[in-house]
Length: 239
Ligand SMILES: [Zn+2]
Image (cartoon, rainbow, N blue to C red):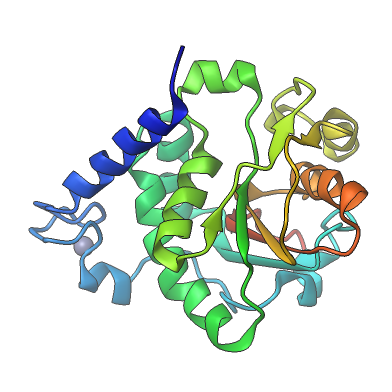
């Protein structure tokens, strides 16, 4: 039987050991940091008007998203260029370390602003993967992201959700099909005690998946404030 705390510790040790870096993950230049300061400052992230601002206040994106069960959505940028490359590596190229890279950018460009102007969540919850996809990939990229973000932000990490339905790949489906595919796909797997949860996922497209995950929480805890942190959002059709 797998002991998940051991797996977690092994991953943490792996990241810890990587902190004695030899090169920057982005530019490959010699660096003691996983992302060198030049790449952080001159970062080639896709242009995004306002990282750290609530996307739900930006009609170009919000009008396209499925009516949310969450109150705030913060993303690093649009799903293209460097962000698309990094997220693809994380999801499809067996590179779990990229979660740490994305979390570094998220802390620098999004959390830095949130921590000044917004209410800080007290609990970080990853969007769970289906058992079938977890078995294939060997890790849940949203969980790696949320653990890195939890460690960097010092916000408690809590696996509160489980998948109760195997869903098809959302990328293969249209907007309406995505809605039906993820409908009632999640449930709470343990009680939570918090006022403000942040759900973490990699990419938001229509918001169908994240919305159903939030719905599972709202059904049991209607008064909990829910934010979403995602590494990227699909480019708005209006821009
Ligand atoms: Zn660099």
